[in-house]
Length: 240
Image (cartoon, rainbow, N blue to C red; front, side):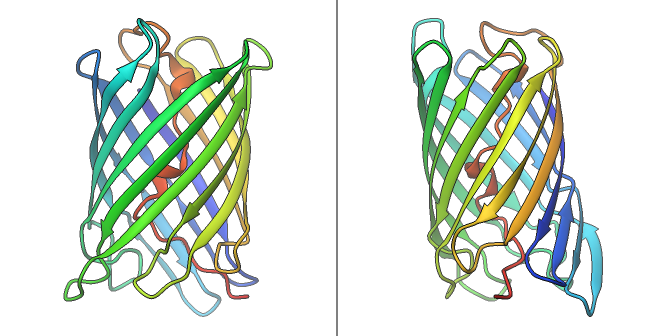
């Protein structure tokens, strides 16, 4: 499965950023999925300067630990390495690698609902000559299959910090996935900052494409625009 997206972040009256992430996922076995991704082309502006460059590269795998017989995973482990491809000189990255692991779980609610709860922990770099720091993540999301095609969702997430001396960051996002058959889906939504240090507003959208065989219930609707994908990525901080 290939996922192509865009993310616009508005952190303040003159602070904004844009990213164009791309992720590819491949099922190697019934219990193991390999992943590779990139933040794509990044732009960032603070009103006085404007920079552009390539983002970091992510390598990871999703290990299914437990699942309903013949069903989707209900407990998985997702380790990821974030490679420092983004320019630290342009403040597009830290210049250091990040190492994260997330525990993912979820279950159906009734005939059409679903809930996911995730916990992640990471060792994040803060510069080539600086020590790594620990980051924790907790997220919960709910979704509902309101029709054969529409799947709206609501998510809340919390980071312990995004910088060594930084405060916690919390935000909520809401969006919807529209399936165009078994192999294609489009999605979009908005994110609103809850904590003072979170970006005030962000908007995102994307396209998912399944290539190759579709196994069981793991079609294009399995797209994961979830908080664990944000671990180790620094958004522009709010100026208020």
